[in-house]
Image 1: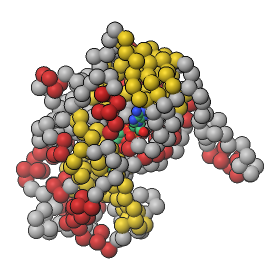
Image 2: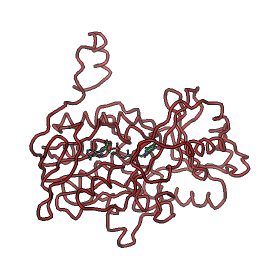
Image 3: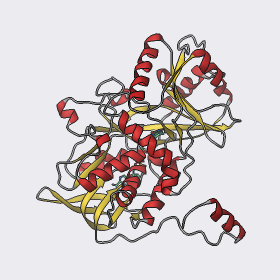
Image 4: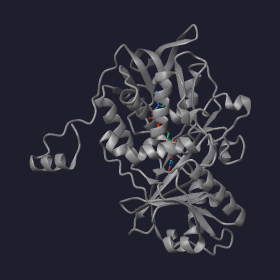
Length: 416
Ligand SMILES: Cc1cc2nc3c(=O)[nH]c(=O)nc-3n(C[C@H](O)[C@H](O)[C@H](O)COP(=O)(O)OP(=O)(O)OC[C@H]3O[C@@H](n4cnc5c(N)ncnc54)[C@H](O)[C@@H]3O)c2cc1C
């Protein structure tokens, strides 16, 4: 069934009796050509592009809970391609271009809203660093504008420009950045994959791998053994636990990151604003709530809930740049599990086990990467070769010292 304005009108006039389930609930088959572990954004996108772009079939996505229950439904919905390094920027720009056509491509309303993203700067050296980043973005075909304080004041009069510690001098604006309704992305990819014959199997946790003579043959799951020719792992914050089952120790730590939503307010924030120096970022949802967040909690955990010191820290960050936020009541908050890599950049690569592939290390920036990550992982699974925009996302960069240290803080997940 195709979704369209015409279909909504027709269903409205006929008592909404014609809607079909968005995806099936199939039983697992004994074996597949491809198994993708993890029904988050990246796993579902991988299965979708495997079927749609690479003409593959006999594909299953195995999800231990329900699709959309992981980070894809817990993030703060920001998409952008404002990176600087060569290893990153072409990949994230590819992703942003895919976002721009995604709703038409998978025929689902994901509320993609290119309302712009602004990174604030507070000093001349920071302005120079942003100028350099903007130039790198432009060279890679992305858009970037440097705003001075007067230009920014017109867009965001509520900011505290004269803050004693972090006076706001301007910002780096990417107009094509913005927000996307996060769980609709999981649903859209799931529906699109299901329509192309992918089995999406929920409540099916992978508990181990069957490996013979260095080659993977299948997975042990809570619903029995399932064989596969190729297996792709995309389980985000559970990467370390899953890959230990294949004898791998990853350059990844799991941390918790929290998100916050205030009560609904009239439209006040024009796009996304990030205050990197104070670890705070904010946008406004279409329902009016201020959606904001800050740093990871900073300790290793597999728990999807955070603690109060970071709540205080994030709210202080908000108060520092937009004191009016102190008048809004906090409505709800939650946590998600981050797969923090050692240099803050992701991995999309083969593993030492034949037929076993890995996608992870997305830190707190993997939502914006969802379309490109799925596309590039599908490319690797289908062709055994990395996609041209993802050639740097290899395991051996840590061994060879070729880190993609976008933030320049070294191998310290708590600083990325
Ligand atoms: C609070 C918060 C805010 C964020 N904000 C942003 C943002 O604004 N912009 C941005 O770009 N990124 C953001 N992120 C990061 C982004 O959400 C993640 O990097 C990205 O969603 C991870 O990929 P995923 O969607 O595939 O993960 P998930 O949705 O977590 O998918 C992984 C899935 O694997 C499943 N799984 C785990 N183990 C197994 C197993 N053994 N067997 C079967 N299934 C298993 C899990 O149940 C889960 O559903 C944020 C994250 C959080 C938590």
